[in-house]
Image (cartoon, rainbow, N blue to C red):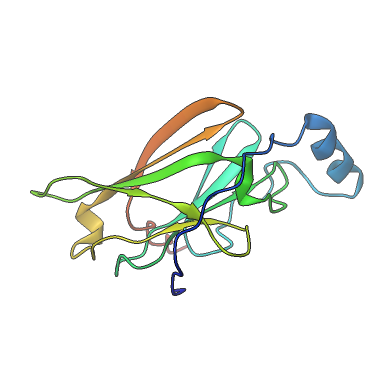
Length: 148
């Protein structure tokens, strides 16, 4: 995982791209919602046409949240604001981690305590996009790929 630098102030959020942006990508041959594979080893989720990938780090040193559009083109991290990750361990108090935009502006990052039992742990990712707060609970560890 990446080493984290000092915290810095997050820039003002930008608006999510309008549907016309996704339509322009369609003309280039990309298919909306055609790619839900993790690009960073995390769990990919959707909210409308917005995709986000949550990467939970078992060591606690490098949690990340990445945002992409309907065709999975990367969006700047500033498309969202107030991004937090709440780690819910069995028989332990919840740990809320306020994430910050990384130095490249590509993802939200944060660090916390290590996770000893990722299969029994969950995470709540929360963020605000277009002034609308949103959250969802997800497994801490990505499910193992199914054998076919």
